[in-house]
Length: 242
Image 1 (tube, one colour):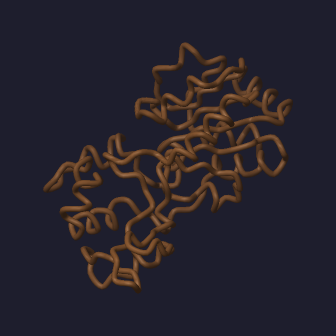
Image 2 (spheres, rainbow, N blue to C red):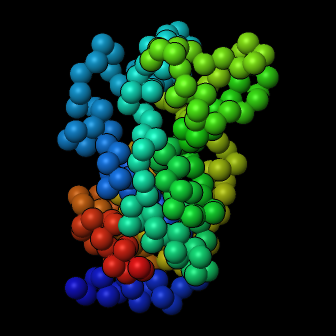
């Protein structure tokens, strides 16, 4: 496959690769894509998923929020797949500078990646909204009931460090992501439909001539890419790196 050979050549000849990924990176770890056929958006709930993971819903209905969050947003048994492992290997080789992800599952770190910029936060970080104390995922999972609202030792409510609808992305993470993308030699975009903004807009900062798109479906930026590979991200990256 000519495209696969081209990708392998670019990866082997660069020490300034940046990867930008979305939900499709983790679907091969059995974490459903929100917008996929079996994702949250195709299921029916008392409230729409977009509503239930919004800031205002979290504030007004914390018990319902946590019931939904524990049931549909946390996949603590998921393991890194070949895509995660390949990216960690590239970083270990000194070729990959950073992973920029829209996912909140922490699988890149579990695979061994060190420089991971989480645009939407992580289920593994939780903090007290009163005193700021940080907690791990256990504080969310160790609930006596599915709708229990976790409390800090100070009595404050513990909130997941994830970006909900109506909330802004972390400006420092955004700034660092822009810097990595601006200066990248090779930019690989994988497992994302590139329809969710402002994250999708980060691609506009890329100045290089080796823009690689790996996705199972067509994206709005296919025509702008220097290399488009349609297929499984785990297979494509795994075959090129591992």
